[in-house]
Length: 412
Image 1: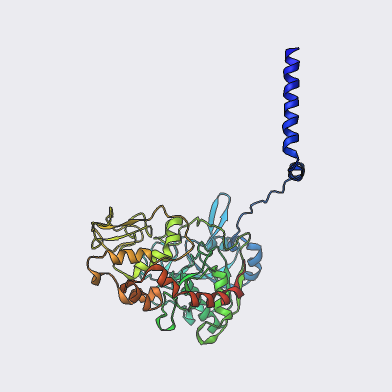
Image 2: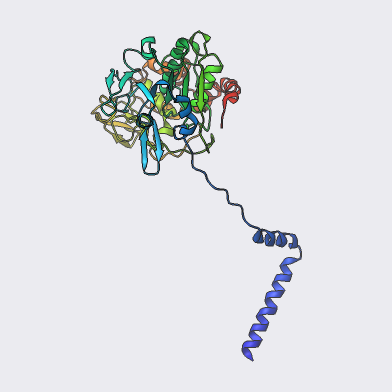
C-alpha cells in the first residue's frame, strides 16, 4: 500500500508539472513532437572529385590525339589504395603522350624555388621532360610541333607569385600561336575562399605575376584559365581553344587539405594558409622558414632585435632549400606553426619584422619585393610606418573592380 501511494503521488506530481509548463508552450511542444516523429534528412557529405579522376569526361577528347602534358608530382588520379600519376595512367590507357612539360621545381617537384631545371628523360616512362623553368619558360614552336593538344594538370595554391599560373598562361599563349587546343583539369584551390592583397600594376609584371590581379585571387586554376582566355590577356590579345574539366562536389568556402605537397617548401595546411602573407618575405633578407622543417610557418633573422623575440632557430640546407637565407645563423623571430586557417592577407608580420630590424638597410631586396608586391608603393608604406589597416585600405578599390570581373568566371 505504501508503494502504491508513493507511485500515485509521483504520477500526480508529474502531470501537474506537465500541465504547468504546457499552457503557453503548447505550440512549441507540438513542434517538438512533430519534429521527433518526422524523419530527419541527413545531408550526405560527398567526396570531392578532382577533374583528373573524371576520366570519362576527358578521355574521349584525348582519343586518337598526339598530346603533351604539363605536369608535376601533384598531377595524380586518386584511388582508394592511394594514387597514380596522371602520366602513368594515361599511358596505360593508350593515350599517345609525346613528351611532358615540367614547371618550376621540376616534374618530380624536387628542385629549389627558382632553380634552373634542365631538359631530361623520365626514367620510369622514358618520356622526354622539357623544362619550362630552364632555357625557356614558354614552349617554343618546335616543342609543340606535331601535337594535337596540350593537357595541363597542376595543383595551385591561389597566390599570384606562385608561378604555376604563369606557366599555364605561357603554355596557353604558345598554343594559341600554334593553333593547338589546351585542356585544363581543375583542382581545388585551398586559398579560394577570399580575395585580398595588393593588385599587380602593369609596369611591374614578371614571371611572379603576369596579369593585373590581386595577390590572392580566389579562383581555381581552371576558373583562372577561363578568365585569362576570355579577357584576352594572352599576348597579342589572342584566344586559345580551351576546355576546362571541372571538379565535382567542391565549393569556394570549403576547406581542402592538399594530399601532396605542391612544392618543396609548402609541406602542410599551415604553410599554405600563411604563404600569401609570409611569401612577401621572399623579397627581403628575412628567412621565412626555408632551411627548417617549418617552411612558411615562422620568420626570423640574425639582425632582428634579440630583446624582442624569445623564439630562435637556425636555418640549414635541406630538401628544397640548398642555400637558405641566414644559413647557419641563429635567427630571432616568431613561430606561427599553430596558426589556424586565414581568410585575409596581413602585413602585420612583415611590419613587425621591419620595426624590429636593427639595421633597416639590410631588410628589403627592393627589386624582388616590388615583383612580389606588384607595386613599389608597399615598400614605401612599410618604411613610412603605415599600419596593416592603413595599407589594406589602399587595396580595396582595385579588389572590388577585380571581383566584378572574377564573378563572370566562377564555376563553383
